[in-house]
Length: 150
Image 1 (spheres, rainbow, N blue to C red):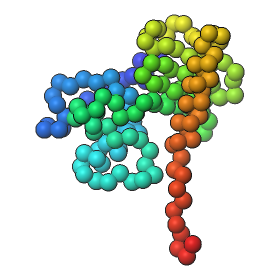
Image 2: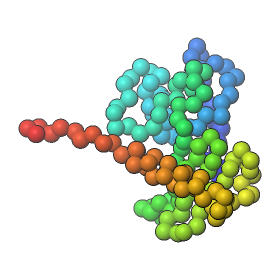
Image 3: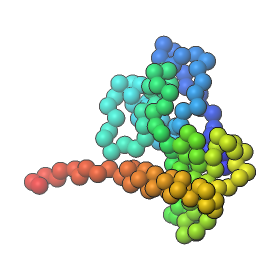
Image 4: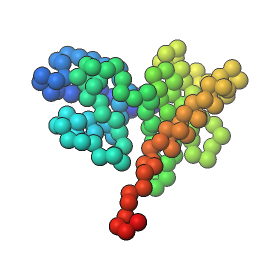
């Protein structure tokens, strides 16, 4: 799925984004809104998902996030697949299935050798599954807005 996950993005902001700069930083579409707000000096609303990528685009940082989550919906209301990607690994979990995919993108960029069932990589798989779980839990805002009279 690398060809539909890792797609080019071009940013142009003269005087802020250096011309010709290239980056391998992890970014998602949900990062665009907070990044554009940041670029215009508007505060990013607290419950907004996504990460401000302006430090990456302006060349001040190599990464703004350490992972991305990719979802695939085969039906309008059902998540069929969740994929956790960091700078080295890609873990894909299928809804209600005991199989999945685990690839070492550094050693196997073509995603030929699925490590999901590898006993040697069981601890890595468990670690990445927990990272996926924590990432999903972290997407939910934890604060409760105050209501009048409360």
